[in-house]
Length: 294
Image 1 (spheres, rainbow, N blue to C red):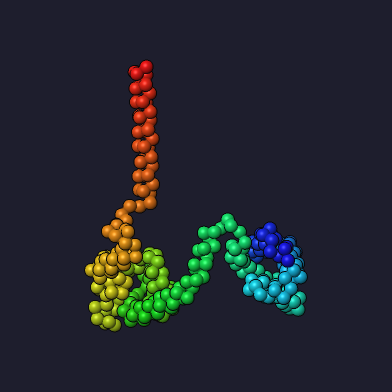
Image 2: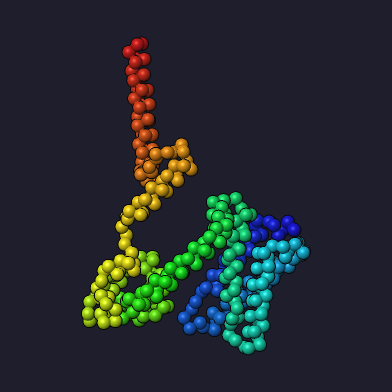
């Protein structure tokens, strides 16, 4: 029981998991037979260590072993790897097709966060992310819905532009998949200017007969992709947020955070230098005063 809950034991297991993940991720050109044999031996060693870990935990924890979801997760991966070994022997394949599942055990680093005091901030951040998972899921669904709607709009407006420059077989609005992928890419501002420029072209790169005023219409482009300017609605929203902030923190009413962290550090350093020089000046002045009096 003490071994199972020992921090050193868990750190050793995590080191083995990291080493196994590294071995699984290593790739060789043409994979010579020697490399395959060495990799097969290492996989057998890792499987043996995981099986030994399972025995230690099941003997120490007994029925409480299945109370921990991480233990069930580890056992499921061990069973999948054993199934992969059986399939390899039956079908005579060159490698275990399920050996990659051990890479998922790297997720057990989150299980170690509550066993050590060295990663307090990371542990709190992890718990905050887990606690807000539902909100993040709802936000993701909303984002997918917005991308879906604008993808259809992009197919309708920009689906007939000829391929040129950055507009190619993958970057276009010809179908829903490419349109959604391109919009997701533009949401990260990757190559935004080039795509924006290539979509605001005139005949013969686009067909004005398909949709009136499609070619080179920057107004439609702004509706489609938006602008990066402060609007009146945005300024009103910012004022509402400021009022809400002042209501939550009345002692800071009227405050405006216009300084950066770097400027604050510089101001603090300058204040300390001034204080030190002032102390030195007073000390020297006091010393000369004592000398003159004596």
